Image (cartoon, rainbow, N blue to C red):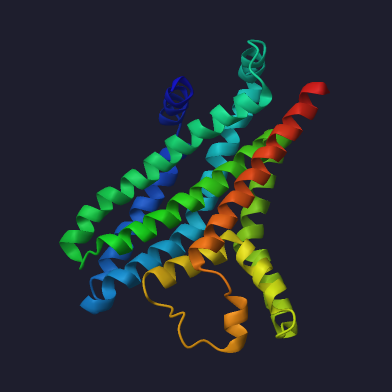
Length: 265
């Protein structure tokens, strides 16, 4: 609890969290005003998908910057070294830091979306189940990219390195991976489609959108072709849980590994 309170004080005094939240708020309001012109039966679901598409560009980069600079500041101010001298292990310190940053950042963003839900009920045909599916995508998106940001903060030594690594990572997930898949799609066949499925759904941005579309009933899993049935061989929520467990564990363990190497140096 002390770590969470400390993290909240640091983030609330800074500008990063509030700047990111302000841009998400403004974008959400503009999208909601536009969604009022949609047909009533489609307006709410279309608004949620538009919010998700907006989140893909804004939320990952803000999560990366906020979490990476948070852990980098610990190294820069030597506070992590002070904590380690109190017989706090690297794993324990990283776990507490991860919980703190996840709680503060997710709490701020999800808190705004629940406030937005009150406005949705006023202007759109609000559906609680659809809204909760959307919130789940926001939480998973923040969990993965916050943890990735903590990893980047651990492996970089200067602020310029950190900024460059953060921008490249955002560009990699949002653009470069999709460009690679576009090049690979023509070679997909019935024999190798399962391998393609693993690679495709291992990208959290692909899995999150697929999960949201199927949960909202905008993508039917019935009457699919044999090729699609072989590609989508697992329920969307299972792909999502695998993604979450894989990326969270990978970046957490890599953060500990690189922090331990840095301490030995």
